[in-house]
Length: 479
Ligand SMILES: Cc1cc2nc3c(=O)[nH]c(=O)nc-3n(C[C@H](O)[C@H](O)[C@H](O)COP(=O)(O)OP(=O)(O)OC[C@H]3O[C@@H](n4cnc5c(N)ncnc54)[C@H](O)[C@@H]3O)c2cc1C
Image (cartoon, rainbow, N blue to C red; front, top):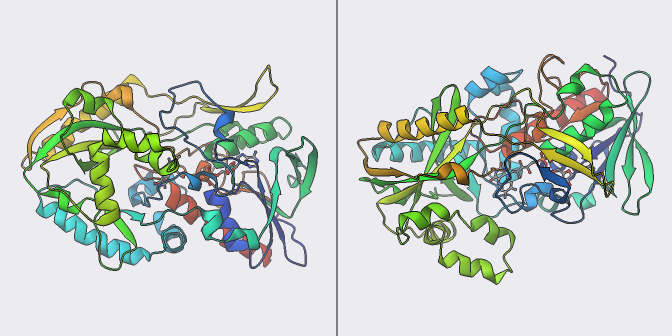
């Protein structure tokens, strides 16, 4: 494969998408490269308005963001790493190769040192064990006190060139090099943008759609996987437990000097799938039926703080009130009752789940998402809940699984896997350097690159991959 041809002056990098991956990459390259970012959204909902759910509809209000910052305008900013075993099973390289990049990612996304999170996490792990709660894996989740929209916090406005428009095509030259991108401006005009290096960071839904469009004119075997191997993390409140131990003391745990709080999901494996459980303090002001019907309103509240109706809704969600008190003010009210929040791995399959389409009536470009949970998969989750409760039997005084939790399974909005890395174009879209197999100067830097994430939210890993790609691009540019 030819290396990218780069100019003698600062090499020009064109990044598609001002979301999490795009912002981190732009930040890392801004000192050494001439960086242009193309962003399609003006409003936070522009991306989602293009989505058609043909499978299970997501229940979240907005489950993908748009505009400067992309989905980091909506996210909770919880940072967590997949376990090394997930890398060994599904990645083209071991987790140790991302160690330095994870360190930087923690600083950029959380303003914290990875080692400080690990030290505090070890203390929390000991507290959980002392309380009689344990699981084969107890990963650390760090939630910064203030969430970051990365376009703003990395101050990209003053460091990169911004082009407003939607990338609708990729023009490939004779030697498998991208010549230019076709960008549709807001006034409907098309323009060509050229560069030395092109990076797709349009997200786990946007990037495969662009690659599918490209496949119509570029015969690359790897592109047939674009939109396949889709992963998300199904999540649901699945039941209630009563505990002997005062676990509420450690919910939204604060360690001295840490600019945020920690949580500790407890993860088990069932049929080769990772399933995690968070024990969230429950106020028990609701009867069981009502509790089963009410999901948390915290996402709605956080993303619509000026909508007064959400504060009235909060009154019907006493568990959310407990959560706010502990997260914001460190106040934890005693309780023996906990609701069980399940977040599960959903390994991708070779079926195409994300497909670029054109609406027949309006002619508008759309993306269809076919999210499915098979009966066998749900049965695995069901048996995992039982196994988790049984394995913590000494601490659990009583437990009750909700009868209809399957109806309330929600997307965690971790759209990933749809342009996954793999050493062979027979099994993935990108190689281990995040370069589209068969292309000289086309890379990917967003959730679509992740081959597997276990039960981990994907944001921290997207950032680590963008940091790693920036290093790779710098090496290429240095010859
Ligand atoms: C409510 C909510 C809470 C979340 N909480 C967490 C959390 O706590 N922790 C965590 O790790 N993750 C969380 N996530 C998920 C996380 O925000 C995303 O995984 C992450 O932002 C994805 O980054 P990305 O770079 O893949 O894409 P995005 O951040 O989605 O950015 C893609 C950008 O590309 C633009 N784009 C798309 N197509 C085009 C095109 N053709 N031309 C030009 N631009 C285009 C889009 O408008 C968008 O701005 C949450 C998500 C939601 C919705």
